[in-house]
Image (cartoon, rainbow, N blue to C red; front, side, top):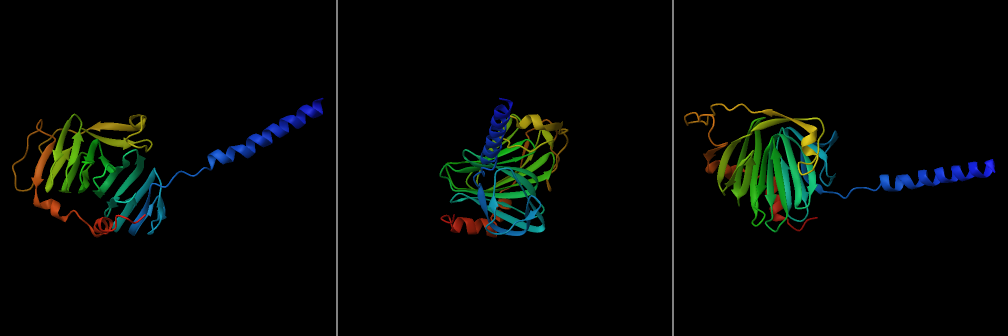
Length: 245
């Protein structure tokens, strides 16, 4: 009897062990593909054209680097030089959490979209029209948002503004963020894994203009012409080849 029980226990243990890897090793679906890469990395590995991007990947570029990521048929994001970000899958396409530097986005205007989050600022291109723009982290409390084509809705704390085509704004954050763990900004537990540090209200300056007193709008209009330089070679390639996988 004891021998039978021992054999039965061993058989059950073997069946559990053999079944476990099946669920654990099931690969997640790719989020996108690298369309172009120069001095860029995915995690700690060099990024190369054709490499696969997965939800949660840490992407970065060196001082002279660039990294173009294609998502679906016509959605693309391009991490510019000296930049770092995490990218995540979203029901509408993708969400990019920009930690430093700049990212250029290009959206098709057919419902698929990409949201850019920097500090506590969230930039959402208008999904009903094609959009091209750039989001740049100036410092932990200030982000510049440019719209070259289309419109982008930008929120900082309780204030939001729609930035129209051809305009650029500097946006002041309510808080800077330090992370204990990186999660998608759309995740329900996102706010449990980072700390907020209030951005002190201070006089803000824009070249050629008098200082803006604290307590005013978080949005400072910079220029219209500045957005003309948003489109990069990588984004142009993406717009010219919407049918590439």
